[in-house]
Every structure is written in C-alpha cells, then in structure tokens.
Length: 406
Image 1 (cartoon, rainbow, N blue to C red):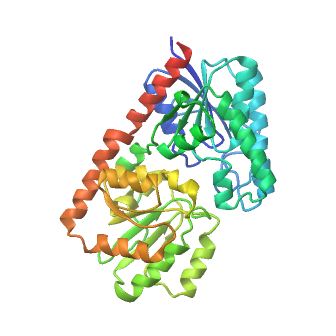
Image 2 (cartoon, one colour):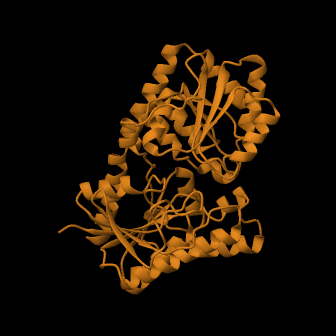
Image 3 (cartoon, one colour):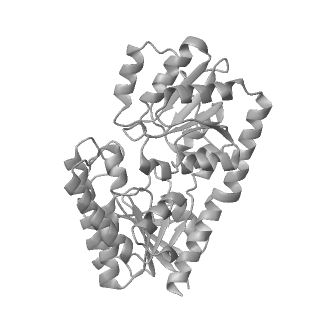
C-alpha cells in the first residue's frame, strides 16, 4: 500500500519553486501517494496570478498531483507587516485544513521558509500523531537578520525560540548544506535526525526549453555572464554592477545579463543608467521553461549573495540549475557554495560583494581557452547528475519517509 505524504508548502506551481511540482511528481513516480497543501499563487509580486481568486478552498490536479489551495493574504513587498500577514494567514488556513480536512497522511513534509509552515506542521503532528520531515532551506533567524527583513533584537530572539521549538519536535530535518547541519547541531538538535540533501533543479524544463531568446539578449560577439533569479537585498548585486563598471573600461566584450525580478530591480536599473553601463542588460522574469534557453546561450553563469555568515553555509538553488545545463560557473558566494564548485572543478571563485574579485574572476574565465571552458561545463553536468539530481535527492527523501512509517 502506498505511503501517503502531505506536502505543506506556501509556494507551489505556477509560482517558481524548486521543491514544488517537480518534487511531488517524482514522489508519485517512486510510488508515494501525495497531496500538496499550499496557498493561492502570488509570489514574488504579491498579486494573485491570472485565473485565480481567493476562495475558502480550491482543489485541482496538476500533472497528476492533487493540490489543495487554502486562503492567504497575498503580499510580498518590502513591508514586514504585509509579509507577516501573508505567512500567518497561510499557516492558519493550512492548520485548519490539516486538522479537519485532509485525509490522514502517513507522513508530513513541511517546507521552510516561512517559519510559520513549520508551526503548522508541528501542531498537526501533535494533534494527529503524524511524523514530520522538516526541510530547511533558510536558517532563521540568521537569514532574516542578514537580509535586513527583521533587525529588532527582541523579535529575532522570539523567532529563534520558535525555530528551536520546531527543530526539536520535528521527527527528521533535512538541510541543503553541510554548514546548515553544523549550525543545527550547535543549536542542540540531535545529529542523528539531521541529513544533508542537496537541492536539485527543474531538469525537464531545462532539458527542453521553449521560446526564443529576447531581442536584447547579447549576441555571440559578447562574452555573456548571466545571473538568473530573484534580484533582492540578499543577492546584493550592486557589487556586480561595480565589477561591470571596472570591466567596461578594459574589456567591454564582457557583458553582464540580469534575468529576473525582485525588490532591487528598479534601483539596479537606475544605477546602471546613472553610471552609463553599456555592458549590462536587464531581462524580465520568464517561466522556467524559457529560462533554459538563456542559460544555454550564456558563456558563464553567475551566483552571488550578500557577504554574511549565514550565506557562507548556503548553496543557492540556482547553482544546481547552472550545473545541470553544463556551463562554467562564476561563484561569488563564500563558504559551502564555493566549496561545491571547487569540488566539481567547474568554474572560478570570487569573494562576495567584492567587485574587484568578481571582475578578476570574470576576466579569468574570459581568457580561458574555449576547450577549458567546455571541460568546466562537462564537469558541472557530471557532478550534478551523480550528486545533485532529482532522482538522487528524492530517493533519499523516500528512504526517510519509509523509515518514519515502518
């Protein structure tokens, strides 16, 4: 008899999330019965997607996966109050459905962030006696402090206490990097219930991309370094603009392409215009099925995060997508992410928020023979398939789920 898994995640298709439909679909393929409990899609803009309106309950099936949507307050802007209402409203709705509406699952999988999803999962666990696997993709409160979302010391202490309450009551914890595991152990979480499972990417969309390159995508006469993803405070991409300014004076063939949306996009555009940067291009966000075209067209793919202790133990999810398409990587994130690229031997390393270091790494890749860049790309792809792929990751989740219900 198939093991029933309730996936609680605030974000799910059509929102962009790498532990969404791809994960649920693969679990079904590996023999699990899955129900997704999520909200109405509004991320990252904070506005409901076309075709959706808030209801008390909406059930749908996406590519064979049953999805239950519960109401929430749509918001995702710089207002902390708006985000708190967004998180709390989903947590409350999901709790009510999880306690009184959902068929009894054998195991609950809860995706963090936000923290409130974990609260919901633990409360359902308490009342219905169902084991919980908690997937930590952001270490709170450290990430909140690093991004400036919460700066009040008392509020951060409260968040920390709630985190500890969840961590110690979850039956199993999965993290995305060795550094996260070390931090959890330092917070007195038993090592025996923590595992590191690297994230994967949307392999299907990347393998068969759709659509065409935008008209303003730089041509082959340029050396295209592409950043794809959210452009917010955590990404701290002003340092990359400064690197572009340095290179414009010496190597104008190197071009930086920023693909995505976020809170900092307009400010970035204004800064680039003010500095008259002709080697910078901004492209609006597109569905993952179209992202693959631009990843394949780029010469190098860029990862960058703010310089902060919490990010030194983070591996940004775009790293896996970049590796899967087989491209050299310019990794400008200190710590675990850089170690991964070094281990895979698939690119160049720069220091976070260090424009000189980023420019130097870009030049290093630019001056490499094409054959060496192709080797970096092959190393990327091979490392992904052997260590980070969807099949590898979900198989390890399967083992955890089965162990909790056996």
